[in-house]
Length: 266
Length: 298
Image 1 (cartoon, one colour):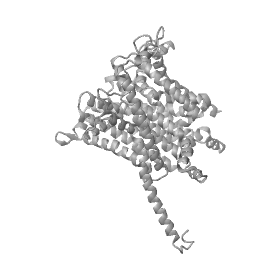
Image 2 (cartoon, chains in turn red, cyan):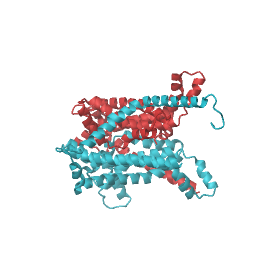
Image 3 (tube, helix red, strand yellow):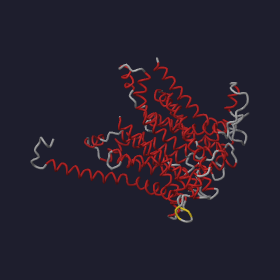
Image 4 (tube, each protein chain N blue to C red):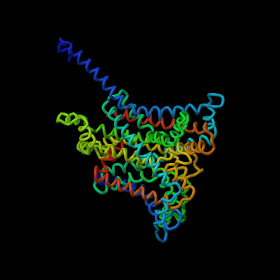
């Protein structure tokens, strides 16, 4: 009896949390159909004009391209680094593995602005003034903790004797990695890749110090748009990003199950 | 073992030697595997932060605590520290109170409901913090959705001023950081074997006692992870206080941005940054210590 009641209360909390989390997203989606040039809920009629306006925002395409490039490349680098280090940590191949694991996760708890300035001063000291390499290196630091946490969680649940078993059964070493280990780690890769990619795409505090007047990432452009003229094109852009993510989540749910992805986010 | 079996051929010594060699070899493999990430941690993270920290002590005449004095000596400077800490503490408390039962709700749900819940946790991560903060200004303003609902429900007769108040700040921050509380707790709670509470009940524990003695301790690692994450994210949040409060709620984070980007006072920015960094480091160290203690008592 109390068990059933506790269950209902807990699920009600989660339902409330879901509504609370989705509320601003619904506002963004609704505002994107606004017929007026004000970022507001549409009153009396809907319009798709802001979806057309997204592409003609000043400097939108270069900012989107830069953000996508930085996010994809930094996520790929972090996935590679995170997997290699994760194996070393989980297999106990290095001394101080638990300290290394904590150090890997710690940039997540460092204030982004602090990391941004620190990197800016450091890069300047080496005479590095190009935006792309500076941003890329900074975003590896930003994305690595997400990957490291999830890969360590995923790898610690992987039974490494399966690789030996596959090899005993005549599988070559690369084949045993790709056919045994990679599928077992697919949820970990999906979760960490998703979190890392989104963290990089949405990063403002680190990037603000490393961009210049000509090269800006999407979040920096977005804050600029909102401060200059908060029209619904930002809402339209956000809605498009949300729809793309929703499609990605649906596919991820079909392939591995969202609960397996979330189960690795410890 | 060695006391019983006579080691006539020095086999044990040889095994030990082989063991040692294997360990050395495995360390070499481990270091090689970890080398790229170590490189990133040392040269793109630890060294720049150490350099920044050193810069906060640098004045025209060498070593000085002047910048810290400017932050910590006057009331305004201390209010920056307090504003940051308060934002972090209230956001963490609120998200924990909502997120802890919600994580259990998520773990108990099945099928489509669970997928919907999970999507509602992942999806907001894809929406820019900037767009979400702006959406909250629409929801919370005088004739926004929240006030209209409150008036419709006769909970208030005239609109409550929420925007540019601490209410809007806390609501916005809680909204943005709630997934970072629920997800780590869920990841741990989902692994708790339900038979444990059944066993406790069979052994005569009341549900409340079973929860306090079995479930609560097992869920602690998730709580530590969630609290550490949400506190460190919210204490240093920049976009949220900037968009929802503007100049009305200066924090260490907004001061850093102002010092470096507007008023060009790098020593002040570095000092504010170093204080924030010290808070971040404290969170890392304390949360690590706590989760290790939790691990050893298991």
